[in-house]
Every structure is written in structure tokens, then in C-alpha cells.
Length: 406
Image 1 (cartoon, helix red, strand yellow):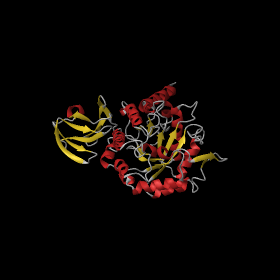
Image 2: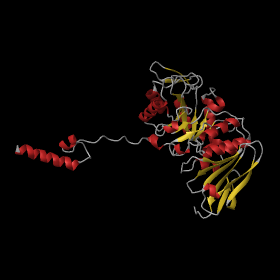
Image 3: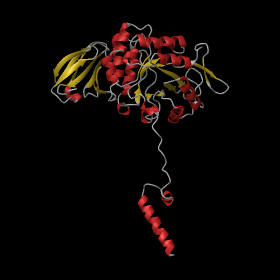
Image 4: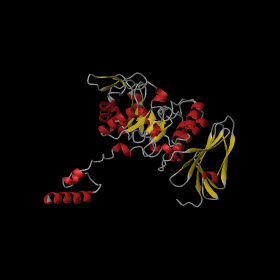
């Protein structure tokens, strides 16, 4: 009995020493039982710390894609100054794939891509750029090509072997699937493939992915497809208001790709479109023909001051501050303690739009103003700033309190 009591006392002492750190079973084994190990952060967790910048084939070319065109687009991204401006991804959208072989491996169209996807990715990489592909969570893509449902791990391994750096993942032919589970499955497959691939969720905002997709995708569509029309730009813009709290480094709201340079927008409308997407910290994915774009289109797409707002390290999505009739004020805080401001005129005639330092919460009586499209420092202004804004146009400024030293 005495030996039994002594044993119980020893056990109690050991358990008391271990406390809540490990289980009683582990303590009784001398504390040698290891705790469950946490999974290590993956390379995917470090991607897209600022909104991705690149080019995608869909808006201009649809299904008419081939390796010659993609090579030419990559070359133009370099020669026309987009690479220097920060664009890096060349992404082939739907219709590059035609079937699966008897082992289930996805097969690229041999007529349109005779050299194969690996060779094309290698060429894009040789230019200092990154390469992207498209697939779909459903059984088929939106254009009826093979989807990834049931082949997630096999496709992810193949993308990694080809050298893919970016995957746009659509939601067609997904009947009976739950979006969160389907996208998580592909995220896990990409993790297992052990290549840092940016994961773009293209679910059109139907299941409110901003509520659940952080840690699954690096960006997620918040709306249906954009159209090359001013009305479509405004409709999508309105749907971004209120989503700003869900965006940040590594996880971005995606209001869809850019239509700048595709012919449906005027010069002023294109500037507005680009300015607002930059203020929204949206991915900047061009969709025009980079080989033949005008000087005006290149001027918009490569403006360093405006792009700097999009790529700001603070990673805050801009918000709508005020609406008055057909005019609006949008604001985005920046890492240097300044504010980027867009004065937007949605209407058909020029309008004067004002903003005060008080509503911007700029703690100073005077502030320095820089016009980001004129690329000019306009000087110091007392209390606020006003500008005449063109029809369907913007004035985009950077406001910095005069007493802030950077």
C-alpha cells in the first residue's frame, strides 16, 4: 500500500510539473511524447504582397490564342515599357487546352502550341517575366475545354513542371460543388506541387469569397465579367464600395481585368478606369494588344505615379468618401502618411469637385498637392483643394501634410 501511494504521489508531482503543456499520457512517459507539429508556411503565403500586375489574353483575344501571339505579347511587355513599370505576368486564359491523355494529363492544343507549354513558359521566363495559365473548378471550362474537377493534384503537378507562376481558376460547369471547398482543394494541390503559384479565384463573387478566401487565393473576383463600356466600369466600381476591409497584402479584391486600350472607352474614361483600379488596390491585369497599343494607351498603363498608389506597401484598398450627384471623392491612405485622392466625374459634362483636408483627416492647415496625371507638384493649399474635372474623367492627386518629413 505504501509503495502504491508513493507511486501515485510521484505521478501527481510529474503531472503538476507538466501542467497544461502536454498530455497526462506524455507526462507518464517522461514527457517524451511530442506535440503535434504545426505546418510550415509555404512559398505561396509570401506571394502577391502587392496587387499582381500583368496581362491576360481573354478581353482582347478570347479563344484565339497561340504561342506566336503569346511570345509577341511578352516581347511587347518588355519593349513597350510595361515590364519596367512593374507588369510581370503573361497569362493565357481559356482555350489553350483540348483534352486529357489516357493517363489523365492535360493536353495543350498541338496546333496552336506546337512547341508545348513548357517551352513557351521558358521563353517568357527568359525575358524576365512570369507565366500564367487558366483552368476551371468545374468539369469543363467556360469554353467547354477540360476542367480540373477530379484532377486538381495532377493538374497542379503539371503546372509546376511546366513552370507556371500564376493560375486563374474559373467557376463554369461547377454544378453541385461548394465554392469554398473546391477552391481550397486546388489551393492544397498547389501547395503540394511545391512551386510558388499565384492563385486567382474567378468565382464572380457569388459566394462572397472576400468572406472566406483569404489564405485560399491571393485574389478573388468580386463581380461578373467586365465589359469594354463606361457603364460596366461604373457598375463594377459601385460593387467595390464596402469591401475595403477584406483586402491587404497577399489577399486582394479583384474587380476584373483592365479594358484600357480595347477601343470601347475614350481617353478620359480609360484614365478614370485605371485611376480607380489603382486606388482600389486591384490587380492590374491589362487585356489589350500590347504589340499595337497607341502612345495614349501606353501612357495610361505605365504612369509611374498612379501605379505607385496601386503598389503602395501599406496595402490598403481605397474607399468612396463622398457622393454628390454625379461626382464622387475616393481616398486611399499610403505608407508615407499621405493620401491618394480621386475626384471622379461620372457625368456627361465637366464639373468642379472639391475636397477638404478635414474630411481627408489630414492633420494640418496646409497640405502639399501633387497631380498624378500631370506629374506635377502643385504647391501648398490651405484647407482643401478644388479642380475642374472633365466629363467621365478624374483628377487624381496625392495629398501630404506640410509638416510631414519623408
